[in-house]
Length: 193
Length: 193
Image 1 (cartoon, rainbow over the protein chains, first blue to last red):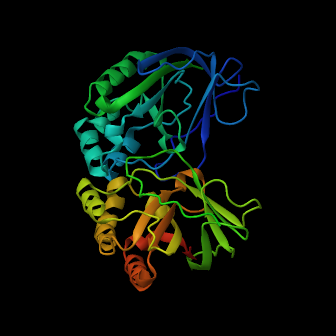
Image 2 (image 1 turned 30 degrees about the horizontal axis):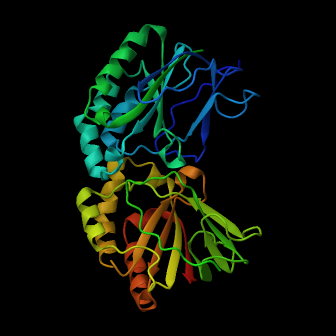
Image 3 (image 1 turned 45 degrees about the vertical axis):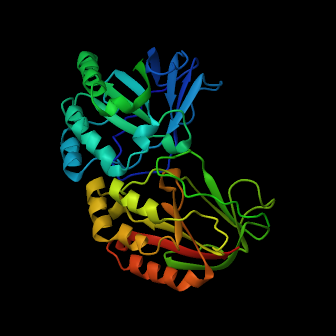
């Protein structure tokens, strides 16, 4: 397996247009897949490894999801400041665990205008909930709705072994929000280095 | 030349993930290129036709720009209602003119958070200015920043011959705004059926 390259969380303004593939396969990858569980909607097929980025496995992947990092669509300047002051980068030596959560929101969500979506995001305490778990749980959002992918977002989390229960708590809190009532496909992929 | 298919303006929620190519070439296309002028930054090379979508010209294009239709990033529900009540679809028989305006905004724009960009968008009267020219000037926004393209947006306008002067007035008004001070590459491609 290749080593994990330390990758800082991408600054919000820094869209690169770089399409990052997440390839589940039985061959090799930076991460070993522990479990794949469908939370809402259909499952993703089982595989042994997840390889992120180019290069890597020589054989056909079991599944591939692609996404790009982009500017955030709701975060205000104040929220961004609070997040940046607390967050840690990806690829830290202590973070042996990662969870990939592909998410799709339903047509009712996407038919709303920007201010309507932002209101639900605010009422759902999306940013405050995330802040409660920083810097222990590092997070990177990848967008893929505009690529014709089966999901809208690939959310990536990294944390130390000792934080796994807190991470589960974060998920319980987010999934209880009004915003999550618009999620119609969500899968949880647990990984270790 | 193939005929122009009537294409309604895409509803905002309707991202398809469909990547639409705009191919300038000397072979064929739904639109004949009249002029290409750089407003800010480098020129695009001269060509005779513009073909939009798949199929079309057999030879190598002079240049290709690709983009996708997506949900709008700033428009509020009230603004959207006002726009939808007034706007006409693309491909109307009377609209013999089209203008393709590829635009890129600078890093200062993209380093701002959502609320900061929205404030400038509002102060710049972006929506009210556009409303003044509906339904005569039909408009479709395509996004491409996240595709690693040389531009961030491909803006497409269609109007009747009699509206060309009003269209030029619309451009003068938009380019005088605070929002346009963040545009660092803009090219104007005038077309006729």
